[in-house]
Length: 363
Image (tube, rainbow, N blue to C red; front, side, top):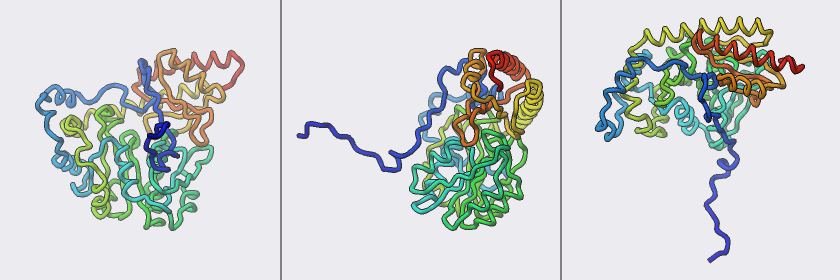
């Protein structure tokens, strides 16, 4: 028997993957760090939760009836959609289905971190296309980066962390320039932007759209998203997707959430009003910010960004330091909640900035 104990080694790709550790600890404050719904889910969802019996949890989840309802809600047919365990699983299964050795994922950056994480678990390469200082969608640079090896192009629309958008015309131009590639349009923040390309599913043959119910719907804890694709692509996606990955509680609650259009409209309207109000606060404080079509705003704090985040937390407000994102040194992302919540955030921001400036630094 050998003297030293050995353990199985993972694949080389797994050993080289970046680790992602979301800062979820100690979130006992106003949570403006993860772009969640800052109030609650629809009361209709709470009513469904109150009626779920213990016996309901003994059965495997049945997704087909709920997928049919979601398809109708999106103006699609059931064969064109698949419910997923949050939008993260949607991204994961899409990459697993289509990326292999020699392929390239084309990625405008900065953007959602998990695109690169999931791609790095495959044998494909990630080709980053850096946005300029304005952090607008790098349309021309992206077109120029398309090659015969491009297999997936991932476009978060609106994008994080800046809230910038790609126009419908730009997305179509990219899809037509790269007919050999899957064009993923991640519309996680659709309800705050109001523009979509989901109506092009099945018309543009290489277009795929992802949505989440974690943001405006306030169902982040239930982990449910949806992937929409032409039937010819969806048949391969479903081969990778687990039939039981969306739990029965999420499936029970989702129809009620979809039916309560008034709640979603009201919440999104409130957030947009709060965003405008908070942007005025940033102007008054002479802080640079980037125009956003989502439920967050990116601000330029500068070298004292980590100190700013700590001071905001001490004042009971959590914000997200994005300085490690490409081209985002010194920048912090602040989720937009209600107008009342953002007045509290504005007060904390003024105090934090005043303290930093009193020490001789200029955010």
